[in-house]
Length: 165
Image (tube, rainbow, N blue to C red):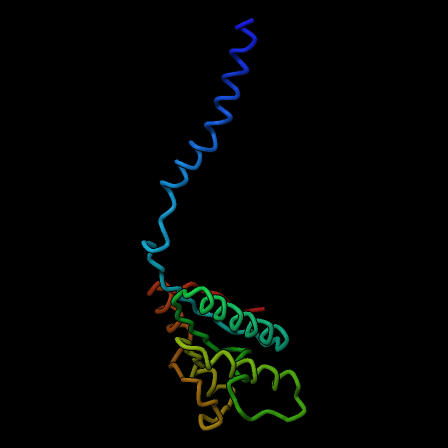
């Protein structure tokens, strides 16, 4: 009779101790919130796409991502580099009836109003596309070369997110 009860007792004992043992192990891995260091999230979004619908969707996603960081008190630095087929979005000179470009302009402005955001256009591309510097939005800064800028940011630990569709 004891032989039949003993395996059952072992199973019940192990079942009862498993949650306690598991929690003890997990508690050693979890750092209390007060002691956690929140790492700054550094990201460079690199827009070279000429697909305006895609660009608009990515600008919306950048805004959403920044809002998530703000909501969760996560420090961040965001750089948006603009060059190649994406370059024309930096100019204020657009047709009133161009709904997509007007949408992009609004989204760019929304993104620019967040803290710790830099929107940078490649001077090589701006000049190549014949965009006058006085036609640039005031929140856009020119960098000599987007390629060397992205390389520098990546070497500084920025995550690279391309918009190259």
